[in-house]
Amino acid sequence: MYLTKLLMKDFGKFHNKEVNLKPGINIICGGQDSGKSTIKDFLTAMIYGVDRKEGISRVRSDYERRKPEGRSGYSGSAYIKKDGTNYLVERSFLAGAKSTSVLDVNSGREVRLERPDTLVGTLVDTGRNTYKDTKVITAEGSAESSARAADGLKKYLSNIIFTGSAAIDKKKAVEHLQKEKQQHLPKPLIRRLDELTEKIEEFDDVDDKIAELDAEMKKLDEEFIIEAEKRKRVARRLVENEDGSVTYQNNDNVDDKIKRLTELRESYTPIDGGPEVVTEKITDKVPVILLTAIAVILLIAGVVHILPFDPLVRKLFVIITAVLVVFTTIDGLRIKGYFDSDDDIVTPNDEEFKKVLEEIKDENEKKEELEFDMTFAKEYQEKKDALKEKEDVQLERRNKRAKLRAEFNSVFKKKSELEDEIKAIDFAIAKINQISEEYKKKAYSEFLVHVSEMIPGLTGGKYSDIDFDEAGNIVVREEYGEVMLDSLPRRDIDRIALAVKLAAAKYLAAEALPLVIDGTGELRAEEPRRALINYLIRMNEEQIIILTDDRKLAPAFTSMGVQANVIEL
Image 1 (cartoon, one colour):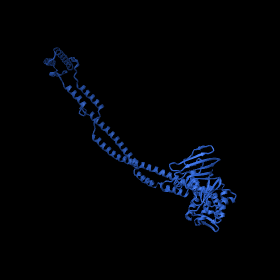
Image 2 (cartoon, rainbow, N blue to C red):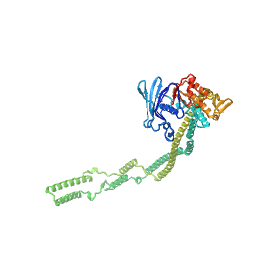
Image 3 (cartoon, helix red, strand yellow):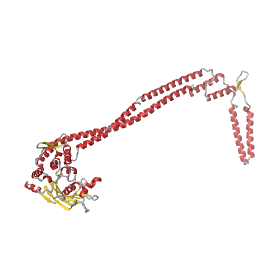
């Protein structure tokens, strides 16, 4: 993929600025503050959009740095060619009116973006950070010290060697995971589990004690039943040994029956040693009963005669009253036995009387349990209540143990979850180290070989191989041995950094995207300049865009048989 045209309608210092590009070498030449870095940022913005960070850093974001001053617009377009198809990409970068469109120029159809505000997934696969770390090279030296420049290069080189990406710091990643691991260590939970275990062990005897108390209560119940039956049998034997008296019965119904039988027996008196006859009362005589009935009828008739009733009503009332009194009198005489024959009246003898008493006693024994000594029952209940109180204490202890066990299970679950997370962190660290070793082996066999090949030419033969010492510092080989990178002059550090980044572009790039080099000021000498051109030619990139103020660079390409597309700013 390469760019054929850039149109900066309103971007940075440019207004309707058009830049035509070609595949191969493109040299954009201009002096200081001519807008070279602005073109680099515009090229990246057309593919990935413009960063706009919030907060303190917002004033230094790409959005703020490249927003045009004094103009309301903030937009641009670019023509891109990929796999023989031309695309027109148009963007508005203005906050609140941001938009991106992609047009297939060949077919005239608009291409739908896979992701908003970026061509990733639509025309490119490489992410913004990877592209900027590998394909966008800033070679101009800055005002920072040699030590800081060496430290920045050390981080960049270390990341590539150990992670295969300039943006991923293996050391920081592992340190972060180690910190997470320390935060997930379940030491407080382990201490709490130990405390809970000790407390739970204090209740180890509770189940045995409850079982013992249950056994004691069961035994007490059995003893009570046996004793109760024993006393009941004793009480029954005492009744059977009595001489016929019924005073042992504490049953009101039986006493009432006996009383009535006794009265009935005493109502008969013997006459001349013959059969017993009933002694009559005055109210049992027939004349008295008849006179009483007549008196009642006359009384009612008198009352009715006094009252102001109709004569017919009076007669009916008296007749009805007379009938009722007659029927009542006849029924009374029947109950008294006046209509019975003399053969129906039988006086019970002593033997029959005792037989009735025996029947009453048998009936009572079936329906009523004999009372026994309630002192024994009271003692039993007191013993059982005491055992119950002890059992309640043990049940409370068991409830406390259950709560402790519930807390133990909850804490243990949390501890297990933390341990699982620690295992996951350990696995991640081990995996990072494993992958890092694989990247390291590959980097030492390929990437560092490319860097070491470039360093002699770009440094004029002063330095050769690059490596790390035991302390993790970058060292390069010179004529008399190894020397630490941060001890070199700043110009040499920048040349070595250019070698590293060119090698990274070749080593890490997985997609054909434009290679952008911003600045070649440190390569004005003939030998370093020719070495750079040789390496760029050997890289065989589809498109290289060089932003420089070195006006001798284009003729140098021409002298080496390479025709470059030169754009003057």
